[in-house]
Amino acid sequence: MGPAAPGPGPYALPLATAAFALLAVSLVLFVVMFLVLRNYHPNRKRGLEGYLDAAGVSLLFLVFGLVLVIVVATHDPHGNKTSFALYATILNGYWLAFAIPVVTVGSSVQARSRGAIRWLIPSMAVAGLMFGAMFAYYYLAPT
Picture 1: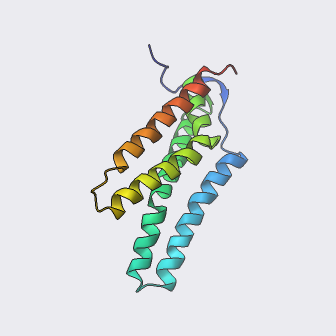
Picture 2: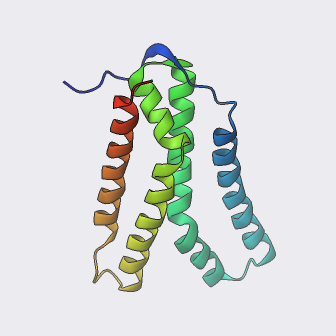
């Protein structure tokens, strides 16, 4: 039987942490960069495309991580092991530090080869496996 669904428990899941602030500021920084590029170089379609190629994967991972942490922490500010493992997988940063470059490379290889080298889905699968491994580590670690 797998882990229980996220729910109430003894583990504090605060959003007032440096890790959460860094995650939120990173996302805001990417959005500000996009807005500056769009506003100061409105006729530079290739520049915007380049930005989205380079930052698209990072933006998706940062949004996913931020939303996941907010949902888990607001649903149960004191969560069970599952809640804690989800929270720790994102906020400890190891998974994001691994997954973002792996999927960025996979996406770039597939885009630059015009789809001839299909690396996006395998790179996402590797990131998913790493998420599962990190989740299991935090779930099974004695706390």
